[in-house]
Image (spheres, one colour):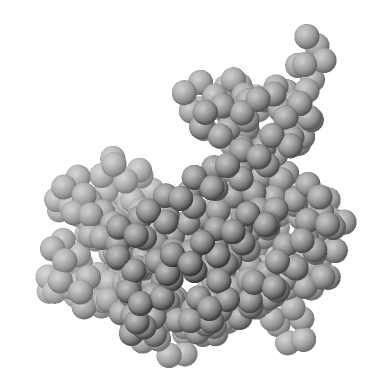
Amino acid sequence: MFKDKNVAFYTLGCKLNFSETSTISRQLTDIGFNKTKFNDGADLFVINTCSVTENANKECKRIIKKAKSISPSSYIVVTGCFAQLKPKSISEIEGVDMVLGANDKFNLPKLLKDIDNSNQVEIHGCSIDNLNYHSSFSLNDRTRSFLKIQDGCDYTCSYCTIPLARGKSRCDTIENIVSNARKIAKNNIKEIVITGVNIGDFKEGKLRFIDLIKKLDKVHGIERFRISSIEPNLITDEIIDFVKLSKKFMPHFHIPLQSGSDKILGKMKRRYNTNLYYNKIYKIKKEIPNVCIGADVIVGFPGETDLEFNSTMNFIKELPLSYLHVFSYSERENTEAILLNGYVEKHKRSERSKALRIMSSKLQRLFYQNYEKTYQNALFEQENKDGYLHGFTDNYIKIKVPYNQNLLKTTKEVFLSEIDNNLIMNAKIKELCIQQ
């Protein structure tokens, strides 16, 4: 039935979504589909959605429209967080044929076989209760692999829809995770990014996140592990000490801040205050001096006055952060935050976002400057971008060298020369520097 049919994918949102899209892709190729690029057209389009912000929802609608314009007779399946939260709304978008919630996103091969051909939009698996856990990891989509270890969240942050979209926190087993890491290694992938919704909450019986990363550290064939976003209150001294001594776990943390005002953190229902965050960042920096530390920040949350925003700006200036991911607060249905007083005008949110993005560029440039004229290890990507090959150092400095096919997906020691206008470090391969 599916022989010689083409399938194309579009993924919105986080690393977790990319790991899951890749898993669904392998499921479909196993039953006879040929994977194609989105813009080349397909018989089947699978769109994996995000719902962190309102813009992600609008982007989902745009992608559906684009898919239909590329291949008017195609069959379109929409899954992911937006699909879980708004299945009926998505089913009413022109061109959509099937909507898959969290419990059925990995049942697509079976559901395609059972299509009833009634021309009515099918909606499956959108109950949020008793969600199953499904292992996922990405392969061959990028130089690195995103390895899912956990899903859902038990936190109740007042602005967040993720618990509504992905349910309660649940975890894979260490045995399965290590097995998947070995499968990734067999595909000649050198770097794994550990991902999930709240990875620091990983647990299997009495085992915790630290026990998992100790096991992963022993997987042969993987040169690098990166810990994706992890809550500050869940980073233990043991985790910091382990990363400090490990040759495989990179000196790179991404630790959500969201606000530098304790008043706003309280309204957000975050599980830490600025004092805890400050001490955690400086503890990491003290133990791992070459560490790269990124942070998420939300601007325009209800009640964020100019005074509160300035508190955030000043707090960030006190911290040894390397970059920021900045988000404007977005009103989401069925969250507590939407009922809070202190509405912040959209133009204010925009101004504050711009100010923090400027600050992020300055932080990144300062961080990069510390490593000018030094030698660092870098793993190269696999794309030719305008005659250059890009890569990342252990501590997440983006570099570029003239394109050389022999360098694809290899790790080399490089000399970092100077930073260009796009905040990318020009580099030279060490062995070539010596030859010259």
